Length: 184
View 1 (tube, rainbow, N blue to C red):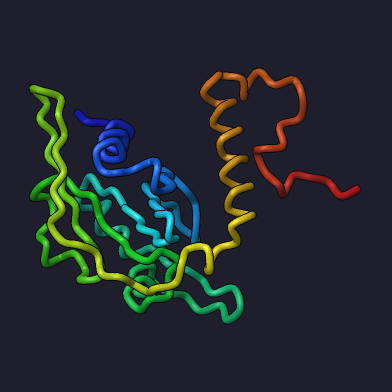
View 2 (spheres, rainbow, N blue to C red):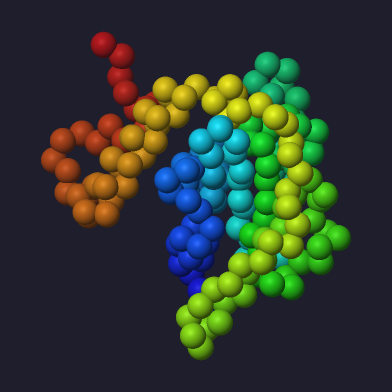
């Protein structure tokens, strides 16, 4: 059975150009976590959402956003479909044949994969290009300095986790939650 981490690793190594784009995985933005977020050198962004089951796919259409000013609730794909989303395009990465293409909204791209367990090879097929949601650069809609600081912080956290040091720290761990900080 192919693990999601292996699928992501295969996808980004086959389809991404690290010299020309920022490639992030499990990156939180716009009230949701992007399984894969690609930002090219022009600031054009593409979010790729991985769905490995029909129920997980259906649940993506139940995710909602609450506007901080008005309190109104909006479904994620309603926001994407009307152009009110930070990313320029959005695609689903799905196992081959899992979802009827008619069930995927027209604004979404479709990328299917086939994993050959005998040869441990994964092949990707672009079924449908995503529609461009808007023309604004990711950097026009996102504070680039904050983005870079957040990315550096996440890298540090991952480094601690990979080294197994997170549980061994003898000093207060400030990475757990900002809400636990006391005021001076």
